[in-house]
Image 1 (cartoon, one colour):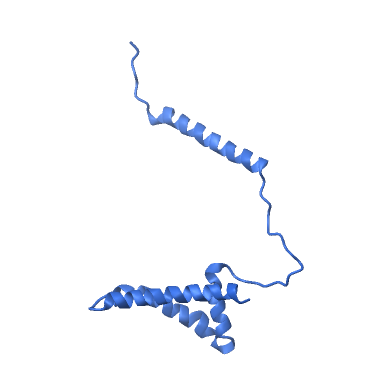
Image 2 (cartoon, rainbow, N blue to C red):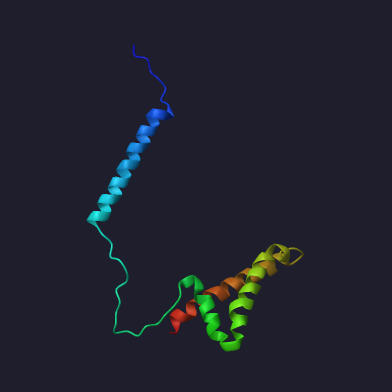
Amino acid sequence: MAEKRNKEFYPDYLVEISIVIFIAVELTVVLALVYPQLIGRQIDFSTPYRPLPEWYFLWLYQAVRYFPGRWAFIGTVLLPFIAAISLIMIPYIDRGKRGRTRAILVGVSLLLAFVVLTLIPYISP
């Protein structure tokens, strides 16, 4: 009767894991060579250029449009600072009799301001 031995990590499992990794890498390389991706964006030169930041900075871009010139400090530094401080202060706002309502109101108002200021550049160019 054959004696069964326990598998050990080295060399048994290490060889199995290495083979699986090798097959996965080879499969990825073959798929990348067979189906190459196009690099870069296709540019339409007939439309005017309209620079926009990424979606997560659109709200700040829109705030700069509402506070031009000397007021830019308010829209780009002061308002985001107040928003960050209010998010940090939510656990302290949440205390008291109507604390949960105030905390929800602060969170929803910040989320609504973020969503509205993000969607405005897409709605009205």
